[in-house]
Image 1 (cartoon, one colour):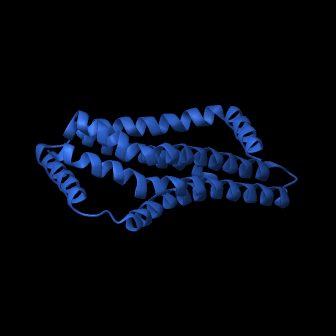
Image 2 (image 1 turned 45 degrees about the horizontal axis):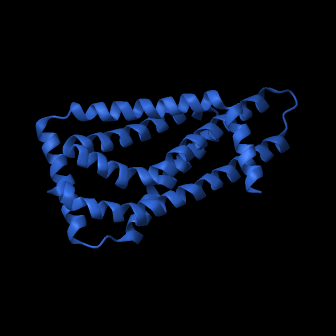
Length: 213
C-alpha cells in the first residue's frame, strides 16, 4: 500500500513538475521578501520586536510550556491555511490566489527567520534550525502540494464546463478525490503540529538561555 502511494505520488510530481516549480518559486520569493523586509524596519520597530523576542526567550526559560495550548494554536493556524487552499482550489477563480497565499506564507517564514537571525546572529540561526524548521519540514511540502492539487481541481472544473458533454458524475469523483487528498495532507500537517507543540519547544528551551545571554 505504501509503495503504491509512493509510486502514485512520484508519478503525480513528474506530471505536475512545472506547477511545483512555480509554487516553490512563489514560496521562495515570499521568503526572500520577508527576509529583506527585516532590513527595512526602523530602529524603533526593531527594538520593540527584539524586546518581545527576548521576553519570549526568558519566558521559555522560566516557565513550563503548555504543549496542549501550543498544539491548539498550531492546528488552528495551519489547518486554516489548508482550508483556505482547499476552498480556493474548489473555485474557478482561485488559481492566482493560491500563489498569493503560498507567497504570503513564505513571507511570514522569511520574516520570522530573518528577524531571529539578525537579532541573535549565529545563535539565531541555531534557534531557527532547531525551533522553527522541524515542523516546517513537514508542513511546507504539504502546503505546496495542496496548492498543486487545488490548481489541478480548478483546471478540471474549467475543462468539464467547456465540454459539451458535461459530466456531473466525473466532477463529483474528482471532487471526492480532491477532498480525500486534502485530508491526507491535513494528517501530515497534524504530525507537523505535534512536532511544533511537543518536540521543537524542547530544543528551544535548551538553547533559550544561550540566546538570551
